[in-house]
Structure formats: structure tokens, C-alpha cells
Length: 263
Image 1 (cartoon, helix red, strand yellow):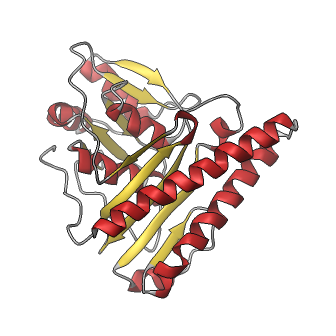
Image 2 (tube, one colour; image 1 turned 180 degrees about the vertical axis):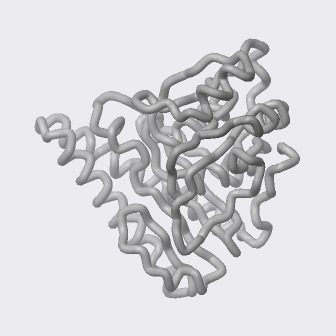
């Protein structure tokens, strides 16, 4: 793990880790079925995206009701934010459909489902499903980091709006840019051995990064803000605009380069 990363909060239980994976898997299967049905029916992509957001959110909130009854809270991209969550130690942070653009562009596979548990603002357990690829990455069992590629660093960026931090970092590291959708797909691409660095600036929210960060930390990747400070969750304002996830051996070089970044 990069020396600037913080570990997962140790208070998560085996049941927490298992539940995160099960919820991401179930929501992902729902989305795959919904996408196939609506694509076959010729549904407008915007309607497809809205249906995916809503149906996945409904399922996840329903499954988390027993947790809420037991004292947990939930922050979802697709639900009204109840700031009462600030009084809870344990808060589930979910993105029912990360990468709605890609979800609506059949047959793209770079979209995801994020389910994470934070304890005292620190990632504790989580899962990222890549449903179109039929894979779920979890905090337990954690993924194995692939061996280094041996080539130039590969930095993953958005297809439509490559963030300034990523293009800056690619120049400083003499790296290559790889385009991809969904924050979750980008982060998991490191664990799939397709890229080495995911640097983002210019705007994200807690639900965009929490589950990917949890899985990355569990696997031994570096994860922090681009200035090296820890990622903290369950804030009153969920805006969390920047992120660095990378292979641990690249963390110092990436953070050193980003120290000169001025957006």
C-alpha cells in the first residue's frame, strides 16, 4: 500500500464485507436484465439510464432497510440526502449505477455498481460490480494486484472529458492515456491489469469513489486525494472532487508529480 494511503477501518465484520458483495452482485444482475429487456424493446437510452438508476437504487435501499433499522445510515446518489447520517458511525455509501452514459450505450461494459460501508468516515468494506463483465471486486476476499506490465505507465481517463490532473500526470510520468467510462470501471481496470494509474480532478462525489477506494485499499493499491491527503467520507457536503488510485510502486512518483499540478 502506498505510504500515504490509510487502511480500511478494522471494525467491519465478515458479514459487512459479504453483504457489500452480495448487494453489488444482485443490483448488477438486475441492471443486466433490465438493459437487455429495454434494448430489445428499442427503449430510448435516456429512459434506459433513468430506469437503471431508479430500479437499482430501489433494490439497494430495500436490502439495506434491516441495516438502517439496526442503526446504520445510507447515502445514495439517487436518494434524498438525510443529514441525520452525520450522527451515525456506520454509513453505507452507494452508487446504484455508476456510468449511466455507458449503460445506455449497448453493448459497452464500462459501467458499475458501487456499494461501500464507512465507519467514522473511513472506508471499511465495499464492492464494485462490473455487471456486463460478470465480475464483482470485493474487500474480502480482496483482489490480487497483477504483476507490473513492464511498459510505460498507463493512465485511465474519461472518454469525453479527460481531467487536467490525468493529462498533466501522463506527461510527467511519460505515460499513455487509456479512455474508459465509469469511475468504478476505471479503478477496477488497475486490478484487472489493464492500467496502472487513475488520477481524477475536477469533480466527483463520495458515491463515485468510496467503493472503488475500499476495494483498492483492500487489494494493497494506493488511494488518496491528489495532494496525498486521506479520503474522508460521510461529510455534510458529499462533494469530493479529486482522487488518486494507483499501483503502490507508482505512488511516490505520481504524488511527487502532482505536487506541481495547479488546476
